[in-house]
Image (cartoon, rainbow, N blue to C red; front, side, top):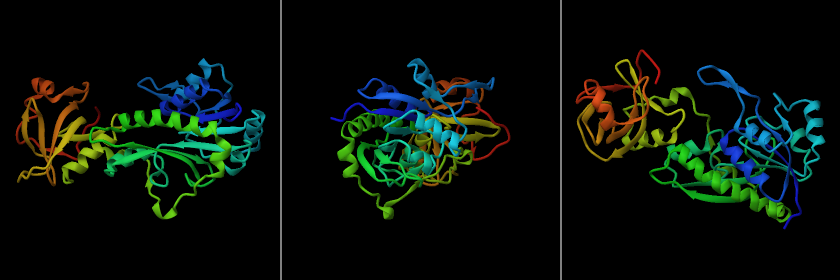
Length: 323
């Protein structure tokens, strides 16, 4: 068992905050926290603290929110923490080589994939979208490259047909907190047995772009179902019905032949909206109309039966936004 370590933690969203909370409750000392500067969010565009900032303030841990780490002042600030190790979880800033070299043991990253598969910004969503049967968490020694460092530990998580981006991230959060605890408990031997990543197996998880959120009904139902689940709860997938933008919250694919046009509503009842795809049928069971809240299709039909009717056509683009 490793003697208690001095840890600097760097992270920003809820996924990172859960890891910080776990580390605070553990045997090691969190001596400083880095997180992204406050961002404007919500309808009022007010400055909002990150989830990690809230945890650090509640625990009375020194907090630092730099705009950049690429200057001598940042190096001096990090060195002042006198940390044994930095733990990085979804931080959002690139750590330059000079920063990575400061903690005595190094910088460890909790990455939500089985590296080298899905390096990059959106590993959880891309794993679901690709139809992967499993993913997991990797604890990696950070290098200047993008998720290129040697791996100390991998823990697998099965991906089911019911997983969304949100629910899979929650499962990975539980596994990630266990994994970083195991690594820190035996860090010396973990470092000695670190495994280099196989560059022949690398895939990249590109950032989710707004253009991806529209549903292309010419695709197969299975492919659309995966994308819908991958992008929930945020940003979600949308389709247009004339000028109305409908967000799809729950759906499933059917391997069903048809001769309808892609995007055509083939049936509309309390079981859902059956929509023709390039191959197969997507059954939408929960959706959100503009200005409303997520509702079952059975409930939506009570107020929108004139729109969500047999033969109505969903399209990729339209005139007005926004749900």
